[in-house]
Image (cartoon, rainbow, N blue to C red):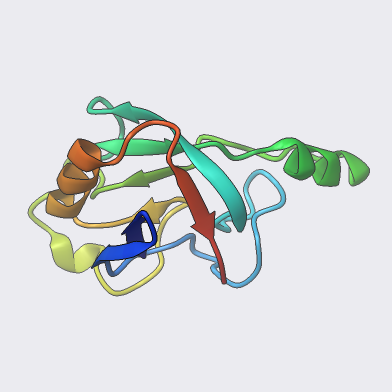
Length: 127
């Protein structure tokens, strides 16, 4: 993941994605990470992971696509750290895709993002 401010690259992060990382998220339970332009729509220090930043999935286009198939889009997609209770087991998380569709970084990295990223910031998720 690359973080930019005013078109200047500030930092790069190694990430983990959904367990099925090929292709965009379309439906609840597909274990894919959304692709496209979204916004950071919230922050929480109280979540199932260390901390999290909300991603505005689903958008209108995502909902319309899922409706065509009579399915739910799912939601609650985040950038987050390690799952609570596993903070001392980084080898369980780093280097492979394990989330249900979120973007995971280390706890130190999500702390950094939590402090610096403002709600409303754009996030472009590309394959």
